[in-house]
Length: 333
Image (cartoon, rainbow, N blue to C red; front, side, top):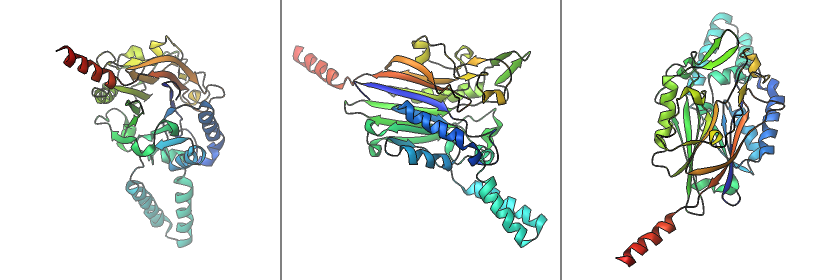
């Protein structure tokens, strides 16, 4: 960060479905993701769909000297219980020690490390990770929290893989505290509506709107904050409550009409064949001035989403000014 200018970004990196039976099969794309992150040199980067510890280890190995890495690891009891049930069923049908040992190796080293397994039974809460430049603040004084949404309706994946949000508070030397939120909102079966196989529309979702309101309400007592994430909605659907919570959409603020989700993307084409260009990834701000916005990591694509970025001006704390004003009032009286 230089001269109170901070560069932030949000990127859904798509580490789950439809990638195949082994994480190693996806190494080329993962290497591209890591190289993109390194080249961007963003001060703060919010990632979504980070499902496994394997990728966290890669982040740590590459960025431990440049970024603080914030995430919440899930309780592995449920995962291990499922694996135990699978092994029990295998033993029941195989009833052969050698065969069981082979299946044990298959489950623990193939199935357990597959991207499909990690997408359904994510090792990371919400699939969310926040990267914060080391130079911004000491990690020990950054407050970090993760919270599941109260509302998990209308998305079947939420049954076993809850959606939620991260929250960190970064104190700066100028008495300013910056609050960052990172989230990935509902994408229910009713979200994507194909009309005549030509148009791509996003319909209003009450559950998703409740989720974004849940985060927005967290900003009420925050002076300076940034909301980052894959919201799975477009601005014209009117699920955001910007005026109500004194929030600004950085892209609208800078008249940037670029998109983060497109049928022109090779990875998106594997899911939906209709033609569309939309921005469903957001950088919302409160009491911060947006200087510029951009969409990066387009060519070659490394995810079904492009990365949204914004250059923001952090206002200095007005505590000293308020103290001077109080002193003047006392003097005048």
